Length: 295
Image (cartoon, rainbow, N blue to C red):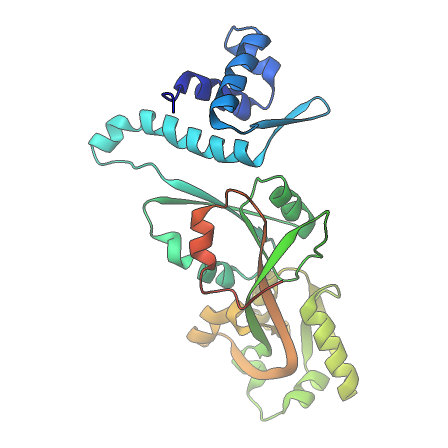
């Protein structure tokens, strides 16, 4: 194999970050054809197309995303040379993780814990809606999406859902609200309740259970954010219906108390990926031995 040409890589790197061949050529004071030729030379040496055209836009292919990750590391190494000699910096491998904005922070921390203290790994964490995160996953801007409802998989959207954990759901509140001997049905019938919104798996399971039990709870709040549910429960607004992992710190400290588990109601957590020719090796280490089932 011929010696690698880092000039070709630098031109590719510049275009990939600018997202526009014309703008890069103008910034480098070169013709578009000259920059394009350098990139084609790199593609020929690597044996893969690095960009694909969508209308007038250049988008990275999967091989292009991998090449950009390596180019970032290579050129960062040059900038970090002095720092490395002074033991102030090391080149890190990045993993890009998207998480549903309403997902339990405690669960996210548990998922990330194996790599949080590694000096060779940089964690890039993004939050958003399911639709936006899955779109970024398809565009190869994310390596994995953490979510609580598995997306549909078909030939057009080839998502792979790794079922990581199934957490029981409980009724949780302040000690003051739970200082009596009421059973679960009495608590639900007499105390104000804080619920997730109707489109969540927890709410669907909860509504089905209370319908079978013939209970009509007094709803104090419907919230689409687990962190806000935790704050409302701590403030004594009502008893919250959520997985104990969401309020683990409060349960440990005694600020909140778990009254009872809701039979048959649970929340499932998924790590969603797509089939890639060049998967991120850090992701494989995170998922290894943790997925209960892949669908």
